[in-house]
Image (tube, rainbow, N blue to C red; front, side, top):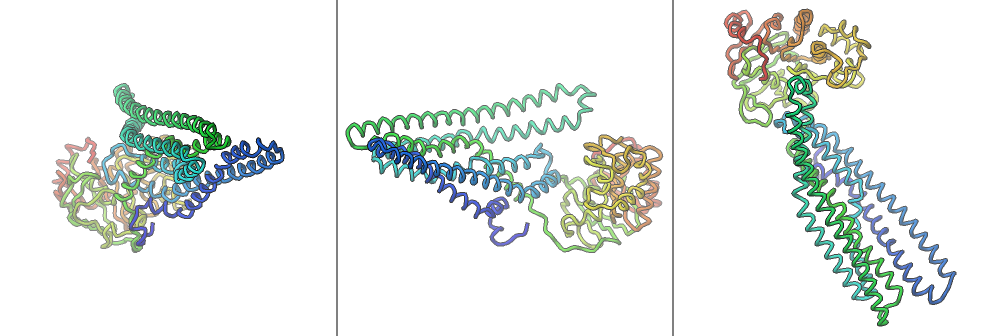
Length: 575
């Protein structure tokens, strides 16, 4: 989102809302006309009682009916237009902000430890846009017109005006008290909902483990406890809003009846006309209706306000990446300059003082015992984990100097835990690139040595692999992910345990793929526990305890490095 002096002084959400300023002004205008037209019923009753009945004039009655019918139709049209405009405002806010929300959802796990916040930002956006599209804003736009009805009540008679004013103050006081009481349970309800969703999502991801080891009941108890907390908070919030809503309705009906009685009293003592009895009752009820509507929508308003604050905080914590200047495609060197790496949301350094450089066509293996920092280094090399110190440079340019989205075109990454997306094999290989050509997809598959394997799938490259690649075996998923990493011949390829799920033929294809990467002048880095993955590499980096133990040609350090490595070749690392 481009920045300018005006936008820089407000939040992104505030700027998005400000872009609809003229639309809100139109809604305010519609609300003014609607509230003026709301007087039609009161004035109609006043004329019927004070003009038609004493004169017994049917033509006058017919004229009044036609006139009030036209006004009601006009009012209905305006209310329909106002509702549709508010719906468009909610949709417009969603359209402006949704891409930012998705960007933050993707980047959030790279900034903080997983606290189950997952899709909370998406729910917050739905809450905000849903409130703006609903009846809540209409009630708020009607509130400023309450003085108009109260003034007219005073014009009928001061006592009637005082009654309407007292009723309005009582309902406003109810609204303030309801706001204070419902704020805490609404906040608690949001927190418990996040916790409940996190447990459910984690259980769904690990369904096989839960079933195989009989953990289902244990996790079910945790989910039930979180769900009970959520339901209790929801009940407290609903009890408060429901109770105050009922009190406001009863108060309004009582006030309406009292105004009727007061009008009758004034008529008896000839201080008002009979028409004022009905007209003032309708008018007083209408004067208090916006407050009652605001109380009815207060729970939604509080939820939308909390969602707004969370989104604002998230946008402030994760500003949009700067555009930067497009740099030439890297083609000669990777330099790692004394880096220190920490996991997202944690200041504890996992690896430090790692320093090496590789030139085009080089291949480096990263080895070391479990917990030595191998995977942490891999994540730092591709720019997904933060550097606490030092720099990683491609052809002299630090990773953060590359424009957002541009660096990824020059990087291929195969993570330790392979994740594919719902779609076809071809779409996954092409990284879901629009207008991806079949030649580029097939070239990547051939570079990874998986072309023949894909052709044996039911529909070849058009085979739907399901959510997370469920239709493929672990080895097939890993090989498709390797082809994705090699799509469009990236300069830097980082493979984290690429042979963990491969059989002998798969390992042979992997070795050939690494050779082809180096032959075309790219740099490949392989994190490995099994020595077979190192066959096509010429450099080794040895890590231990998060520190660099050795770096150099494989022929120079393999003998001393491979001895301790073989003691841990069967271990899996989570580093």
